[in-house]
Image 1: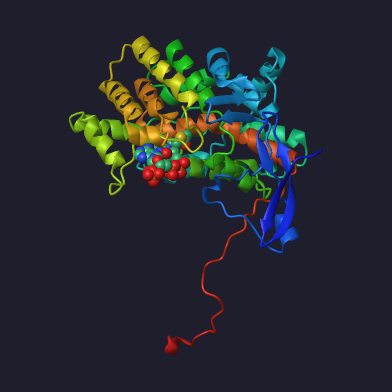
Image 2: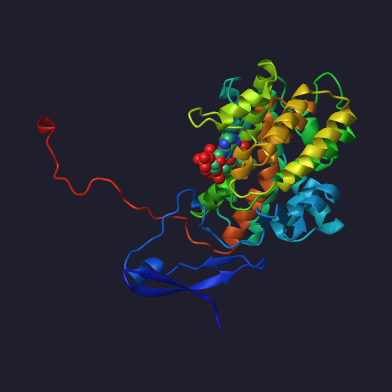
Length: 428
Ligand code: ACO
């Protein structure tokens, strides 16, 4: 017998089916709520209880600290896979064979040249522009240079758009950084792996060849994998909802980049480093900042702490903390803010304010420390997050289109004025 939930409104009962996911999560299917009840809707600010879709891409259990892409644990993927394999897995559903991976990579390389005219748009930005704003604008602008990417009526059309953006996005990432630093704009080198190419495009000095460092390649691979998807978070929901109007992939991604920029989401990695830096400048007094974070009259929050879904620990934070130790050790970098971060974490994990609210370090608490050790400027941290999240956004957009999901259009509860007769300006 199928499972049901019963809702009683003013003495009248309504039944709604329960649906179960493959991990036994339960949801009440309220598709007929409004029509069967004569207009009743649900209200759920921040969508804390609302499933916006069914998805087969990423599973996470915030209570148990589990994160899996297409069934594979984040720990295994971070340890054993490379970023391009993970991108393929997320987008197409299975780990690729060598042949599939080679074809994917060669199609990406084939499409990785960005129209030289895009440089003119970049030129018009001031050097002071935040690279996230630049990246979002240029990603949207790519639509104008690739108009056929919008109208995707077949899986092949989708594939063509996907390999185009997978190829061109790292170029835009590197240009956003090089512009800020007054460096000539680079194109990629087809002889390199995906992540090696990103590093070369970002860091190649015009006066000399770029020497690859396996420590940096491995560190970036791992960071990108850890950021690659996280089910229906703020930016991913934005990508899905923009794409649900059948706007093209590139502009859907541009809206996701804008959503990611905020300090409560991806912008937290920059905010964490700035916070740790400020604590160091202020004499390293972590207790003072712990007190500020707990003071309800102080807007300060411990950046990199807390998560909407993880209420036990963020499995990505564990991997990143270990990686931070390893990468700094391998590179021979001693960074006092790593000690400040560890000190803050220790204090917070013992403090009833954080314990009671189940606030743990999230993915961004340690990622900035690694980025900094790699020589990546602080304003690029959220851009690096976007580069990692790209395959996740693409996978979610593709799933939404293949499932022919309806346009996203929430309801509201109106709480404004009721009807008022118009008042002529002299009577107001
Ligand atoms: N420092 C101090 N107190 C906090 C923090 C924090 N970082 N995070 C949450 N709290 C407190 C809140 O003040 C609230 O306390 P109250 O119950 O006494 O009012 C309680 O914990 C619950 O917090 P909410 O804001 O309601 O939790 P929500 O799920 O809406 O927000 C969020 C989650 C946005 C991540 C929040 O924890 C936060 O602002 N963290 C800092 C920013 C950050 O690191 N963002 C990155 C998230 S990971 C990512 O997007 C990749």
